[in-house]
Length: 247
Ligand SMILES: Nc1ncnc2c1ncn2[C@@H]1O[C@H](COP(=O)(O)OP(=O)(O)O)[C@@H](O)[C@H]1O
Ligand SMILES: [Mg+2]
Image (cartoon, rainbow, N blue to C red; front, side, top):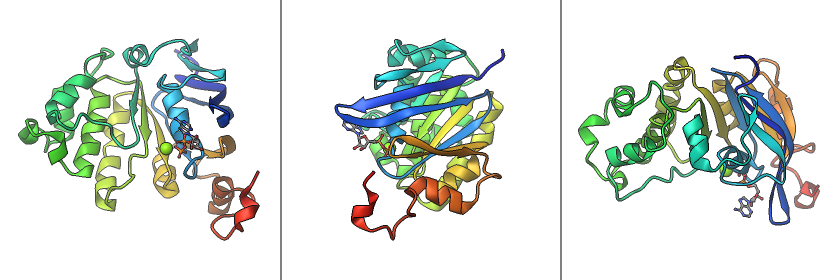
């Protein structure tokens, strides 16, 4: 196959009057990791949820293998290999760990991942598979959310704020699994508010500022000043006067 695996083409998404994503384009090749970074409210979740089919674009397209998938509902996208690990995990908290994984397998795309493979990846899971999800720690729940997405055999894994609310040691453990996942031929779109986390894991970085692309590049090309400017806007950051932030 030639051409990118996933392509976002001139995508614009509104929530009512608010333009949350404004003419954003990028693509991801097979086996590639793209980090989308941006401040709170930049449009990152809207972007991922639109790729997963949970929001409809005002204009522009989402393409998988060169085919426009705009009209497909979320479950059809899962069956084609687009899986989202949503911000805040969204597990079924009264169900067991294993039942949550079974839900993920429901619309699965055929492929290498199944519950057994997820249990190899997260070796603490088998002994706790009968526990309700609410009994697990935040990091463990995040692992279940990733496992639930993996059993659907994604070709593109969309990870929204993977590290939010987790201890650094837990974040490190979760990111340590990324090479294993990529080795199965999966492409990953990582969304992070934590810039260093996103940038260090990625092959390429795409920064959003108030719904627009403010910067793209490889981690090696980008200086931290450029990243700061793209992340916070022209006037730079936290010291900006309140009224100066208006666009
Ligand atoms: N369901 C929604 N309804 C209305 N506005 C929304 C909704 N989801 C997000 N927004 C708004 O869209 C903008 C982008 O939000 P979001 O995509 O969640 O950004 P991020 O994930 O980068 O923090 C914000 O201004 C947010 O308030
Ligand atoms: Mg978000």
